[in-house]
Image 1 (cartoon, rainbow, N blue to C red):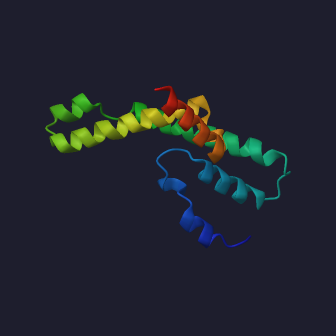
Image 2: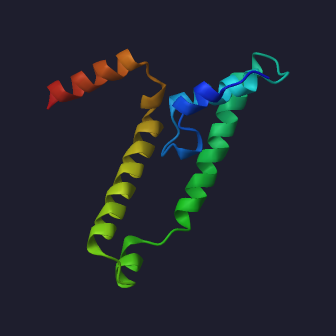
Length: 119
């Protein structure tokens, strides 16, 4: 097994807020080190990512709502930061659902330019 310390320093791994192409690429690289058929690696990568996303979605359902946290006497600044975080998470889910994360950087840039010009 090869050393991936330098690669791990650049990859978000568990700390990634949302599933990312970089984390998926890192996972595929790790799977490639296993004695698996090459054709199975993309499918296995998708399966693992889907399982992680499902687990995170389940965890999201079990969290306290903003109203419950406010009722418990949370600091307004903390509450606003929490609301912003949850809005960002919802936007990220919508972008993933639309398949934006699968576009190349050039395609994403073209899409962003198109959206900005359309407004």
